[in-house]
Image 1 (cartoon, rainbow, N blue to C red):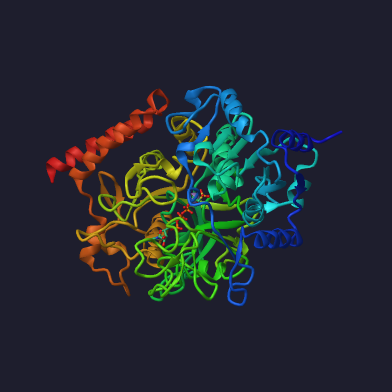
Image 2 (tube, rainbow, N blue to C red):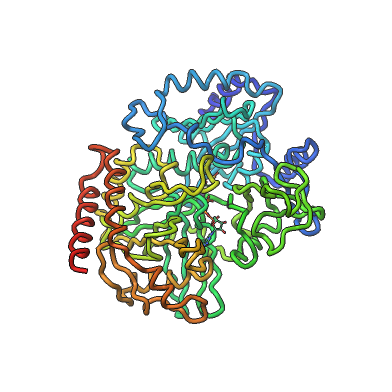
Length: 586
Ligand code: GTP
Ligand code: SPV
Ligand code: MN
């Protein structure tokens, strides 16, 4: 008798007609063979093996460089279950329309079957997915990003408890590109893109969109969050998670290196993009990182801003859409103070500092094994996860949003997450720098109606005797000349220290209409080039600006109609009342 997995693979094969089928076991030999084949056919370019052993460059199709949210769909039976936050097609229509594109799509190509595990192998929270793909680049990337092959097959056995993902490069034409999710059947169909979040189906498609749907029914949370442990000089380690939209600093915060003046502090990385969080038997929220690798943003990454990731990506790393220097090493904007005199840009064209285009694509990325990161926590694969004491919501905001403030309570914190806003980045196709609301940094990733998602968050709070404290952070506030007011990166530790002190009841704060804001004296400015005056600006609460903002928040929340929990609407009303009374007094 064929297993459910074998039956499904047969079915996809008869639909897509590959010339052959390769079941991947996840071994080193298999990885090396696939890499060799891709170097031979030009899919990968070998980098300088003395300086970057095991590292390769991949150039994607120039129209296929970021997630395409307008081509991403959640196909629930009922439209309102997908919500205003998702594009929607009826499942039957979607399968007919996109099924036509899958028909014969793998002719002349090899189909790779990739069984994978999201979560540490020993964790009760780990889940099995299987991706079939005609892209060997996807196969080797999934080997880095997940626990792939034998370990997943062993876990699955002959069960049908796995998330099915079928992927084909198709013809890479955006007109025929679709990323479809069928959360009610736990299926993913992706065609026409080879790019990360569109094609590595374990990541955003499974671990966020499908998993968030499962989590709602099963009573847990699947979130776009980093997970980090901060060790203080006394040895105490406190774990927190942080939801920041794409390209807003999760990877950097997850592996922060304290500046020299912050002696005795240490940061332990557990995860840098996705957190699965469950309640343990005493109602403590615990987080696991479902991934085994990093798919991180290259531009802006250097030995000063993030030495830990720089160490991680010196070997066994795939670079996508970065520039190539004549000595066979990778380059991107912000890597060195001085750009190379000449190189090949991300499309392989000659580039010099005089060129008007960027050398690397703004969303160029690296794919690297997490275990190579020097700051990985000894508990990063702990089966039960790490206990979470605080949750940060952050985004890029040039004005209005203070460096940090704390929610009054869980419900107010959920509200802060629900109205999270950020300026858009190159991580998704479309305009960059436009302010948009991105609730919990999950707008592109929530696999169901966000009104229901907010209700689920509120409910989770009621199941926790001591829910994590919730904070809003913003490293990106600017002065009138457009310069960042806050140096960011390692210096963000100074903000985390206030967060920890609040968690442990060791710091005071000023109660303002928007939440608890630190006083200037509460943030350590020793050994940093930030004046008390600048810090005052960073922490300022512009009451009139906030009143206007509350109006915009109301508009945003309205779209969820009767699916919006009444509590969140009330939080906005209460905010307005607090602001109004303080404006007239002040
Ligand atoms: P995704 O992988 O897209 O989910 O992104 P991410 O949230 O992990 O973002 P990442 O840490 O890769 O940072 C994205 C960009 O923001 C990089 O260019 C960083 O150099 C920059 N960045 C990160 N932290 C800071 C900071 O504290 N201040 C400033 N000014 N820039 C930062
Ligand atoms: C993001 O865009 O948030 C990423 C990269 O982490 S991707 O996997 O492409 O979604
Ligand atoms: Mn991400």
